Image 1 (cartoon, helix red, strand yellow):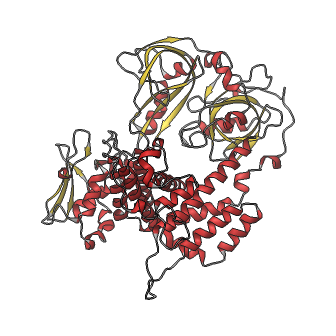
Image 2 (cartoon, one colour):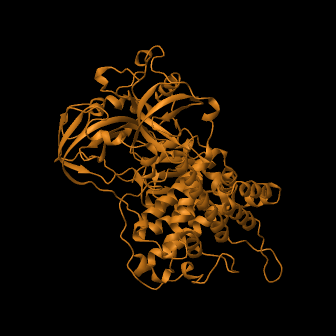
Image 3 (cartoon, helix red, strand yellow):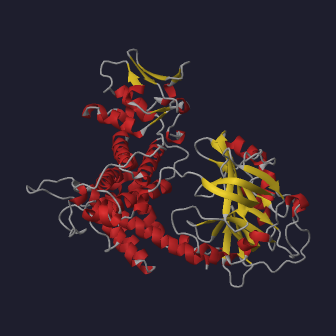
Amino acid sequence: MSIDESSTGGPGSVLLPAVAPEVLAEAVESLSGRLRKKLDAAIEGCAAGAVRAADGSVGVRFGEDAVVTLRPGPSGVVTEADQAVCGCLLAPRCLHRAAVLGASPIADPQEPAPPAPGPDPVTGPAAAAGPGAAPGASAAPTATTAARAVAGPAAGGAEGAAEGGGLTAAQVRAAAGLWEAAAEALAAGVTAGGAVVQAELLRAAHTARIAGLPRAEAAALRVVRGLRAARDRSAAQRLAELTGAFRELLYTAGLLASGAAGAGLTGAVRRSYEAGGSLRVYGLCREPVLSATGYGGVATHLLGVDGAHYSVSDVRPGGLSRARGAGAASVALGGAVLDHAGLARGGLRVVGATVSPEGRLGAGRGVRATAVGGVAWGEGPTAALFSRPAAEAVAAMPAEGAEPGLLGCDVRVVGASGDHVLVRELTPGAPLLRLAPAHPHPELPHAANLRRIAGHPGLVLRVLGRPDLDRAATLRPLAVGPVPGAEHSLRLPPDWLGRADLGYDRLQGAHFPGGAEGLVPQESAPAAGADPLADSPLWRVRRLLEAGVAGGRRAVAEGARGAEPAALAAALRRAGFGSAAELAAALTAEADRRPRDAFGRLADASAERYAWAWLAAAAHLAAAERSLVAASWA
């Protein structure tokens, strides 16, 4: 299990060990209803009062009569209930113990649990709706109904899960339980998504893990961590990221609960290294790695002779200082005698290579590596990176899932737009592109290097970076270099081998050409301002969805009673987004629905119907934004 310390707040939070999700869920479930209402208040301040003992245990005192002691196992994680004890009379079903566990970071399980045996008869909520259920039916739609709405009419029922979809009935039931917990968490939102709501999600996530659904479990853990960060007002909290985490969780759990999903949607817990034989790879660039959990390091990107992408990474605890220093650290791979700076401009011959599915080279005992000379950009296998227009390269990348690959292009600088650099590709009819910092941290030189580049309109340069598929025509460059044969281009030192790593090398005045030779007329500023994604009214839908995540169902319902829904629908329809207008209207209507029982009394509205409406709007928004982003590159 790995530790995620970003989910806790306060100066003393690093003292608390990580806790397995099921241990926290069990502790919260054992509390009485009266104690559950006090849990969120009890969690506040727990981390700041933690004290580490000489034996490695961590204690938190509550008054004079109660001390909670956490004794993590060899992995540094509390994985068993008896590793968290309290000295009060109500222990282990006490508020103190649950509060300390609730203040601790949530650990990631890394070892897969064996899937439950199956198939067996499908029972429970996943089969309640039946094949004829529809969103407008009187009964509340279940996860099966919601998933069919997203997957389309071809989605089958849960009864055929073990045959057509490759899922067992136990997996379908576990996904249905996770859907229900996610729907309740969405209806509560950040404002009401306290420890009790989070514990229900964690318990459902643990059940999904036991059933062999690691992707769904991982999505649930991301939501819980996002809720914690938002409630703690953590600097790492991003409402847009939490909204995306909810969409992923509901989508994954809904499709799995329908039984229509293939086995690929279950995910994989461990991505083991496999034998790669003998490889010859050439360095492309270095990229600093800096995580919110205090880890830092470097990833050096490589290219094989067959065009396959590889990387060698060195990431350890240490934060910013480690990320800055790791760029010159030695490469720990098969006895190779070179550092990451040399590898980024050189190459390796690797014998007995081990490779992860993402292309990361492993450093096993049988690996032997020898340094070889590198190649300049545009030579050898690197020529393919710059051989086609950026629009074609982006169109060939997967729309979702994996991180986008590296993209190379030759561009001409137009000017600055905030912290972005506006450039135009040196391809006839190419659109304007935005170069944005690959990492915004001010202590890393990405932004400073881009500011220097922006100060030289007309400059032509070769760029290697990663497209940002969430923003219109935006490329986040990792390295730049001169364009071969161009008069007004970069002038880099010979030992840089024609490239500058923007996260480590700092561009100076001597690296830019003097005078105005080779310049072309500068483009007018108004042409640089178009952004089809920002200019579309889809931001209104995004704001509606994020309001639901932040304030829960009540926030969406309150907004539905004013003039905002009509204005939202009108703006969307004027721009041609009729489906978005209908889905947004359905969401606000469902949020404000107040059903009554047979005696005319107000009853609780279905959280599942609301989650279905929210997911439909979120899925449509994501698809519409992806279409606009793809069009912006053409």
